[in-house]
Image 1 (cartoon, rainbow, N blue to C red):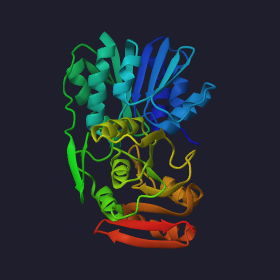
Image 2: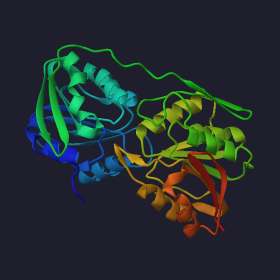
Image 3: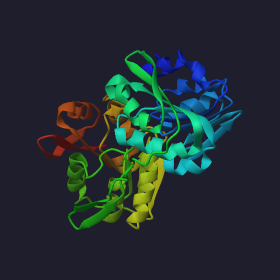
Length: 356
């Protein structure tokens, strides 16, 4: 597998990691990032992505379970699978912050605001990312914090450096939202690291309306739970055995907070790469993502559909909502004997696939 452009940009500037007390955070998707810290004094790597974190753990001879948050220590390296808030108390003081830029600018702002308290004045802050993801203008985020220079530009990626002098306070927590589907009402915390802030996205809304009348029997899975709304809704429908899973530690933490907010106690929350390592269920409900960082891909969802029958009991049902143009209907028909469209809008389609 080819190295990512951001890794190659950092690799050609690997001296920034040497003999430094590091924090690495942000969109840590390429496990090879871990190879850059071998000559650091200490390195804390905060990884939100379960797949990348498992791969990095394997690189240092360690393994991970499905719980969160998790901290894996090896020699001078601490690998933390966690949302940033939960990770705060586990992060030591550092003299260098390397921030891999998120496509969501407000998430980058949040990370800068929360992690600056781990830096003394005179520490270095680096931002690295793809130009089409906002890296070319990341200096605008750094300049209020201190003198900023462009270090390198390569592989359509940009690396900036700031010398930290001035604290900033530019992050505002997203407001809660209220959701009502039929007789079920929910209040939901939001997070800049998790899909769809400010309102329930139209695809999930269509999915919830489509499953509002199903009989709550057996085990249910909210796959790719995001803010946790589907799992909470399934619990409020009457399902007594609900699992919510996601690859993102931020999504898992947000789901946990939202179950508490809605007084839901029977939802199990686990880290998972799509269906890998999960059980069998009677209902799987999913609004699958098709973004990884700034890239778009349908491959994870196609693989999930191909493997879904192995995670459904006999007669179990997969409810999937997706942008209509993605064409998942044909893949579903190739893997399920019974597939129907139960709802659609100008943009989204809800499919029901039954495991015979």
